[in-house]
Image (cartoon, one colour):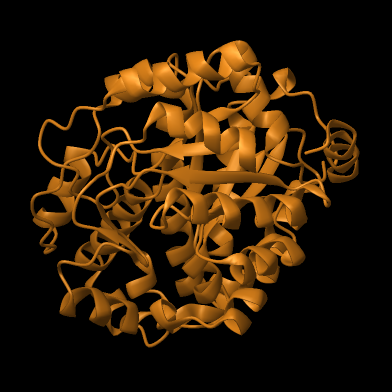
Length: 385
């Protein structure tokens, strides 16, 4: 099946009252693993590439300094890999840009093959956020591409996104935002946080999501709410990393029962990134600790050296530059690298498989009314959005 826009997948969550996990990937083998596990559970799939992940996939090892040229290359690389894996799949799959920072970054993703984009104007005044988001919506909807905006500010750190504190989303502003931008989905601030430390016993304010969703229904607006910063940060994985020489401190996620609850309060898409990073890092550490000879293998020993020298790091992008050709294109030059990709895939599938079940996505693939980009473009044109 060809990649589809995100909108039909979101519409299914709204109609059938469940949440859809959206999982960030930073390598070809991660994307393949996300699709594999969704097929196993016959669930629709949302793969996400963050704005700077596109820079990394474009070969920029210091991805925090990625240029628009890096992002153009990276968007095409990840989109090509996802399309290749998806073409023989029987489940609906969307590729979504996470935290597009400006119009050029969004355009790079769309032109590269993404079928959905997020534009993050949450740091701007409301009127400027609306103006930027509307500009993106016009460009994307003409091409059938889904658009997610953001309103309110989440605390925490994720790539270039940083805030020391939160500003909760005002439900009245959210309705204005939907009306004036015509976005398909809106990421809200309601108590979640980016990064691995969301605060011990963090509590989400589900009443914010409920209020926005009820107002949308009252106004006759079709829109789905999105929960960013929603990794659960499994304690057992953190403990395993630390037992293997890592140093991950003050790591707390959003309680799974809270995420399951908000999936019935208007939240249709739940973003998960940190959990995957942790599981992959644990697997790599475990392999090198338990297989001392691998630390001397010239094909992969630099990965171990990077891990050993930075015990606080848990983002695999800090460790994987020695095998960038594999990261970017999926090429497997030897058995040592094959083992590394196997470990990465296992970490992805462990986390993603668990959440597919918990979020209620199992068996929902046939609930999605599949539409192509051209069909969605025609729909938007007809509806004037």
